[in-house]
Structure formats: C-alpha cells, structure tokens
Length: 408
Image 1 (cartoon, rainbow, N blue to C red):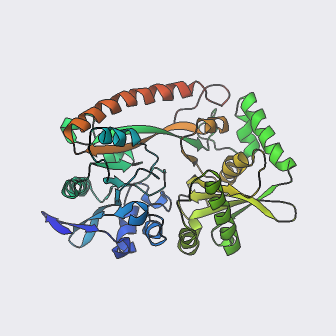
Image 2 (spheres, rainbow, N blue to C red):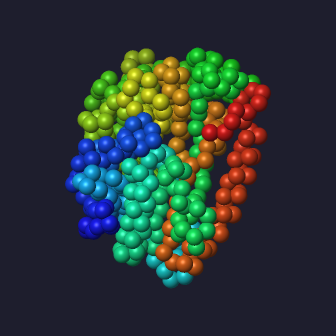
C-alpha cells in the first residue's frame, strides 16, 4: 500500500527484507543517541527476527512497517506489527483485551510499534524532523482505522517522540503510559561525576546489609568451583553461541514456555551484529561451561555507553548463579570498560538490592472505540498517580549508604 500526503509519500511494507539497510540505519542514526541505541532497532536485527521465524505472522507478529519518504529520502519510519496476542511486549494490556471480550468486541488484531520481545527503551518513531514524525503518527492511525484494528500502541519510546501523546483522549487520541524498570548507573552516589574504579569500590558505596548479601551470593558461586570468562564480538566462537542457545532454550522450557527466539536468530546475531554482544560464560576448572548470560551493548566501540541485560541460562543448578551471571559479572565488566549504564530489563524489584534503581519508561496508546478510549484514559491517569507513589516508595529503599542518588 502506497499513498501520498502532500510532498510526503507513505509506504506500508509487509516484508522487512524489502527495506534497504542504508535507508533505515541512516535514519536511525539521525535520531538523538540513535548511534548508541544498541542493535535492537537496526535493520539487521529486525530482519533477523522475521527471517528466523521468531516474529512472523505465524507467531502473531505481522509486519506492516510504515515508511515516509520525502524527495526519495526516508524521512520517517516505524516497525509496526499487527498483533493477534499480547505476548512478548512487557507493557501489559491483558485487562483491556478482557474488557473488550466481556463487551462482545474484538481486541485483536491490534497495532504495535515495538521491537518484538525486547523491553529496551529506545527510538521507535524514527523521523528526521517533527513534521515528518507527525505525518508518521497520522499514517499509523489511518492505517489502523483502515485495517479495522482496535488500537495502536507505541512501546518503550523516548518521551521526545511522544510529545503529542498528551493526557486526554479527546484532545489528541494518544494516551501516555508510564511503567518502571531498574537501571544501574556507573557513578559514585557521593561523587556523582566519578565512576566506580572497580567492583569493590561499587560494593563500598552500598549499605552494609546489601554489601554483605552480595558478597555472600558471590562466594557461593566461587565455592561451587565456577569462574567466568567474558567474550565479545568475534571472540565468541560458534561453539560458544551454540552453548548459549542450549542454555537459553533450556531455561525457557524449564519455566514451561517455548523460547521466543530461534537458533537461526542467534546465528544471524553471530554473523551480522556480533560486536553488539557480550557473553559471560561460567565454567568449571576443567573448562566445562555451566551457564552463560548474553548482554547487548549500545555500540561497537571499545567502551560502549550502555549495556542491556538480555538472556541467560544454565545446564546445572548452582545457588546464586543467576545473580552472578546476570548482574555481578555484567556490572564488573561495565565498570572495567567505562560503561555508564546497565539496564536490567523488565520489572523486578529484587534488582534494587543489586543497586539497579527505579527508572520510568514510556509508551503511548490509541484506541479506536471512543467509550473504551475514555475508560482507558481515566485508568491510565489513575495508574500514573500510582506509579508515581510507587517510585516515591522505592526511593525510601535505596541501597546506597547515606543520601539516595537522584532517580534514573
């Protein structure tokens, strides 16, 4: 489907392989911090999700990417999917879907602008200027109406992209929603401009009970005879990737769920985006691997700005191994390499005990049904007040010694 809007040409793409990497990635890097936003919105990542069978119409993710062209240049774009469920999103709308069903209405399919299975904040409504972004938003809503979708949802976008999603469904149609993640910052709470010098320096900044707990947890893993190796990019061998996939799949199945991502997806990461990944491997003295965690990086420089905790798995049960693999080893690597922030993924108050602090994340929602839009708008305003109280409550549980550092 192609159409024009003044001097803009709007294109809807149902096959991500039709998009040129140069067009998409150049637009991504034109966003604020787009060049250090990780692999997630790069075309190779999104195409790999599709080509690997991970995010396809068969799994409930039907691409309807919206591209806005101006004089032959890609001026705006969004990875839009028609969804037949709400799995793999991490901003929960199950209650909205149930309410639709109770009133004899269909909530699915719905429209979703997001990176499948990826609760990482970053660019979503790519645009070279505000005018192009507004055309993109209008094109998204028009497509949703044409397709008969119940709603549109833009997840984990920076607030700057959602400036027009203001409270009041009657005013703009877009309704803001705030959720909470937990992020660690490489700055000493008593000297905000000073990063930690090493892991012991970080531990020394914590309250005594938190410091003692972390040392106890790390000691359990060390006493089990496990040591860690960190590998990045082409240091990660095909055997390492295969072991990671084994661990990743086993962890999902042990929790009673099929894994979202296929082995083919991770082979694509190995071949095209390896420098964006850090693998922390736990092994015994004889070199036998036992567990690993896969961490994404914001960029391919020697000292990336941000690290993102993503996946982990183990073939043996070892007390506290999850904490070591998913938090302490990545934080240790971040400190050693000058990484300024580590994002721990969706939910998890337990992360505060590891000095990951509450951080607001943002989304925006549009519902086609006026009565439901009004009800959801009122709900979101109440929920937003509750989130603010929740954030204030979490501040009182700050794990650092002395005064709490500023949020986020």
